[in-house]
Image (cartoon, rainbow, N blue to C red):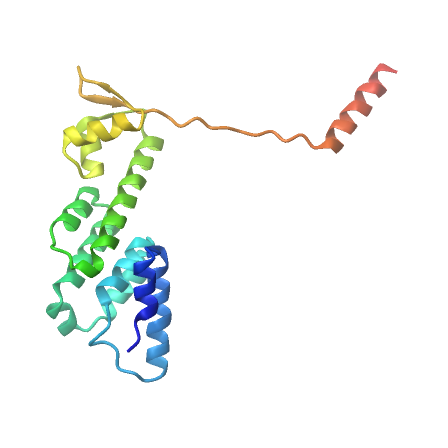
Length: 197
């Protein structure tokens, strides 16, 4: 069985394409009647859906994996644990699931990339949802110790009020461009001219 398209995505760190590549390859193999389940990289496939934030596809893939394969490959269950935590919005649980398994060399880089992306996503969520937030909550949402969460927040321009252990969120500046349409300017000029004369 040729899994080189999947290996190519992993080698090029194009993790957002892994799920689609796996889906396409799996459909091709199934349509040809080739038995693929025993050698199929289910953990990578499942993590590809999780990485793409396609939890419905991850859930359906999980349900389609034969029980004996789930039981014989604990890494598949470890990836699914991440998916379950995402599904239930257990933010700290996502980090616990990531840190709670000794990942194989084949999937480690993808797990690290997912963790970094997830941390950035959570930080952006906090940035848009809060003006002030406790250090404890920042640490919870980012899956870090309080000291590391403070450092991370300060690196991104937030300010610490150490007297009450609160972090003041730095809101991103919104830049709005106003493009002036020449035809509108012409109409405005004609209107003003008409009023004056």
